[in-house]
Length: 275
Length: 353
Image (cartoon, rainbow over all chains, first blue to last red; front, top):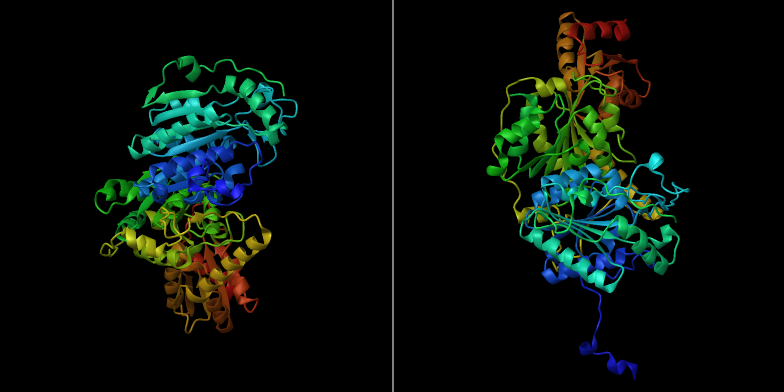
């Protein structure tokens, strides 16, 4: 009887064809799967699967190439923006995107990130920020919050010892080479829709040769944070979002409305968390 | 023209698609020549000054992984930075061409010529069991010609090729015959030469993945065996060397690059004195002309390895000769080039006695 309703016209949800059938290795509750899916949907909807080349990082998403059904290069730790620079310059008609975590993009690869942005490379950079090194077992990331515990900050991040969390997204927005800079999340359906719209805009900017589009997605790492997925999302809302506010920072080459100089230049006081 | 200029002009003429570099003495003329020539307006070749050698070698990785002919150049300290990228490139089996104009080290060292990166070039440099195909030009003409040969080898083996030269050859001016322009590959030719490349997945094939990652140890071992097989094939099919006056020689110099040029003069001086001296010049340092050294070792009384280093290539010469004859090293380093007279003196003192 149940088989009676399995008909094409009753289909409400399906896997996008730009994702492969491989089973993802990501932890339940992790944002990577959703972030992958919305990128794949945008590639599918824009009809650019045969022109897209992705670059994966070192970190949890190192094997993103197993999940996207597009040509993919796996870069050394932090070097994805340099890799993508050459792909795009040598193949200007292709769509090139990088997919990196916070350690990859904002610690070991800061120079490559800043210079690709400053050159205004016509690529899309997707930045997953969960404030921790997930793959290596939960060590401090450049974006780990002050007071936040990790495997290498067991007593909480201490500014005197470890310096400040790096808000690289705000930093990149100040560079003339970036055309679109935004911060999103994928932890609720409404946020997923907004994040997807941002990814779409970023790829359209690349199509229109506008320069570099940078989409940060603040994500939870419930395994690394040692919480349940639901707890992790709540903790993210209460602690990550005040330090990494969601929304557009730069649109069409101009600083977005409501973004003050204080947000961009003078580091606004960061809240201290206790986890 | 200058050696560094020859490299740049050969890149354009050999249909190279892209060059990504970072300035460092004594080879900055490579990128300067390319920027002045503006090949993007003629052949369509992309030239970009990167923010570091780390970035430039990773740009080479990224671009070459799309099946295009991509090159870079640097000098010793810059090549040290590139070693990370080179092991990834070797591990992902990407063809590319890299030039190292060696200068004296260690550390920042000196900007004067040296040959002290032999170990780095032929024994790894980066981590893991990988090999670069290493060519050692001894003239401006070879700097030019080897770029063309390097592309053939790089794509034959899907392996990075290193043109290992030094500041002396990079900076010296010699006559150089240039070649007609070989057009850059068309889109179709690129796909033919690099079916493995990331150039956009058509519906007719699976997606191409370029990576050096394989977490499953048994598969990683199989991959390593494949690499070793490739290196064995290089040793079988693509060793290059030159022998001068070795037929009747009692003694031979073994030297490459600038040192081999010095030794040619030392050999003349020796012959004028009635000493039967020859020269074996390895042109490829990996694969090394092991068989040729072993054959010579059966005929001659001794060998002097002349290197602008503390003695690096001598290890390969000794391994090849397998203790049959006396083999000694003579070298100057830190940016000093030996004179032909002191090299001959060293031969007489250390080998002939």
